[in-house]
Length: 237
Image 1: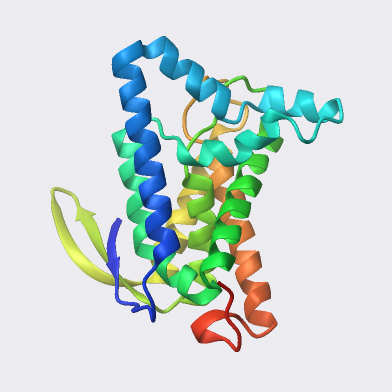
Image 2 (image 1 turned 90 degrees about the vertical axis):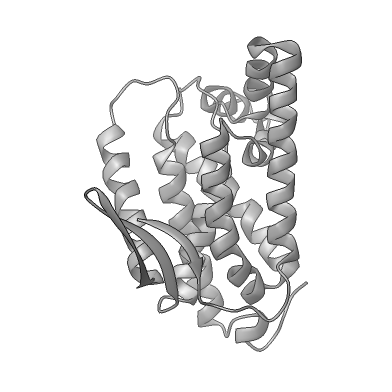
């Protein structure tokens, strides 16, 4: 199933969510321009320099160099994407679910949550395969954290989804708990299946899993202490 929109209005414009979409789109346009102007070698260098390379990050941290450029890639990698489908899929999920989480956490709170979620997601992938030399890029981990938070904050929200039934498809309004729960189960299944498989690239399933769990835990803690933003007693941002 592919979510298309949710029936969960917000109280104020999602400025941070929109800014992230624009930033990722601008970064992708830069990638396209670099590839077209300087060739694939230059584009590959960009991804290798600004994506998370687990082997290089673990080596830097093993030397006690926690403030190196390798650490910075845990943030910069969140704005790079490997292709049109990668970018558009991520931005669709962010646009549908990010605005409500931003509304709940406040603008500054959501920005910090989003970036921290992406960092934790990247570290989860590094922990699973610390010796990998394949760069990890994409907003998927940060968006997975956003999905985990949405599930905790708004489990009953209705999400209009495109559901394929063989050769046919249908638009169905489905509770967020089912849409996001199904998405998380797919990540778990695919992540477990990928364990022990040697690959150069591919989908960083454990970044998705780690980000989702981190986002859900943070949202649960926020709810437990009274929440922030429109649904709680105080707002940030």
